Image 1 (cartoon, rainbow, N blue to C red):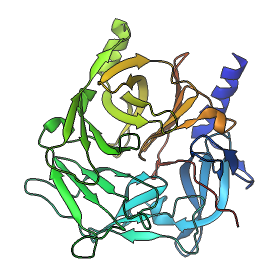
Image 2 (cartoon, helix red, strand yellow):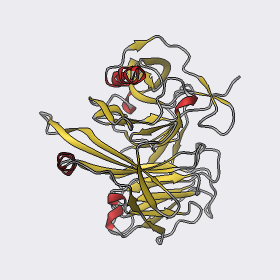
Image 3 (tube, rainbow, N blue to C red):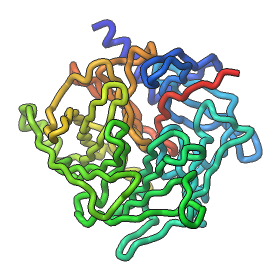
Length: 377
C-alpha cells in the first residue's frame, strides 16, 4: 500500500509539475531497445519557456520522475505554445512530430525530440497531399511510421489516416519511378474505420487500423498497400461484470479504442477508454476526463481477453502513436499502469487495484515521446 501511495503521489503531480534543475535524464535501459543502449526515459511534452526569436526552451516531464525538467534545447514556440500558429501539429510517432501548414504540406520534424539537435533540426517535407474522390485531407486522425529513421531508411513508411475513408502512405527516403517520394492512397469503404487511428505492428510488419467499437481490425502491407486490406474479426472474452451504475456511467461517456503493441513481449492490446464531459468552458469547449479504461489482450485468432494484468509493462496513450515500456527498465515507472495524456487531461490508470488519477488542464502538444537512443561522442 505504501508503494501504491508513493506512486499516486508521484503520478498525480503530472498535472501540477514542479520545476527541477536540469539534471541528466538519461538512463541505461535494455527494455525498449533490443540491445543494451543509453536511452532517455519516456516523457511528455509540457511547454516551452520563451527565450527570444519565437523560440522557447523545451520543458518535459520524464515519466519516471515527479518533477518536470527544463532543457536547454530550443524549439519553435508555435509547436507547443501558440494556439493561433499557422503550423498545426497533427500527430507523432517514434519521437517525430508531424505538422501541417497552410500550404498543405505535411512535414516530419524532430524538434520535440529531447535528444535531437536544435542547431540542426531535421524537417522533412512530404509530397503535396492527394485527395481521393469523396474524401478529404484537411482533418487528420493521426500519423504512424514503420521505423524511426524516415530520412535514412528507404523502407520507412509514413501512414496518415484522415477523417473519412482515406488512408495514405509515403516513403520519405524511398525511390519511386519519378525518383521522388509519392503518396499511395487507398480508401477503406467500411464506415466503422472513418474515425479510426492507424498504428504500425512491428511484430507483423503491418499497419493496422481498429474499427469503431473494436470489433474489426484492418491490416495493410506497408510495401504494397491496397484498397482491399485484410480484415480480422475481434471477439471479446472474459468481460467483467459491471454494476448498473458503472454501465450507466459508460453510456454517458465518449468512447475511443486504441491498438497498442509491446515490442519487447510481442503482445497486442486493445484499450477502450471512456471520457465524460466535466465542464464546458466560456468559449464552448468541452473539458473531459477519463472515467473508465479497459484493457484486452488480443491473440492471433482475434480473441480479445479482458485483463487487469499487463505484467511489467507501462503503457502510454497520447496523441502520439501509443507504445509500451517495461517499467523495470526505468526506475520510477510503475508496472501494470497506463499513462494518459490528451489536450485536456494528464494522468494515469492503475489497472489493479483499479484507480484513475488525472488532472484537467490545457495542453497544446499532448505527445508522449518514447525512449530515445543516446549517441555517445
